[in-house]
Length: 160
Figure 1 (cartoon, rainbow, N blue to C red):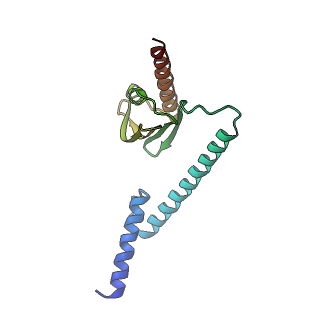
Figure 2 (figure 1 turned 90 degrees about the vertical axis):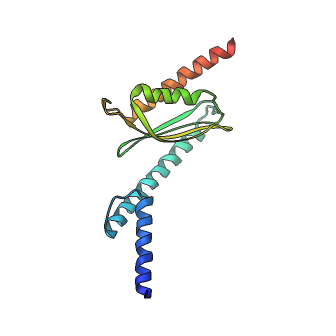
Figure 3 (figure 1 turned 135 degrees about the horizontal axis):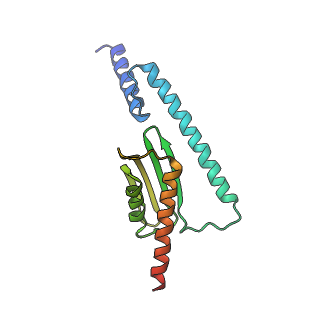
């Protein structure tokens, strides 16, 4: 194999890796690069939004309660990315959130959950076929309501 063929093969592998990392469906190299560029712009926007959210949270005069979950929902090309985070583990909250997904007709495609010291849920979901068209605000409201309901029932149980 001559050095040019080896270099071309290596370059082809790198384009395929770039294609998979950026979830591109493009076939030619130029389109893969364009998709990667768009992907990077979206990531930069997410970083900026995250920085704004964190700076707003830090500048707040209210003390942050580690038991109060933070819920964010982002609309994806097909479906939603749902993130729930609480600074303290909340036994039973995961079940309530998953039930809320089921109630609104959201099918979870992928989820990562951590319930060690803190509670963290990152889920990707799509509405099922008989869904009536939902938006990110409706998903966020359903999750927030489920957490509030869970929290209230949990508070009542701790009084018993």
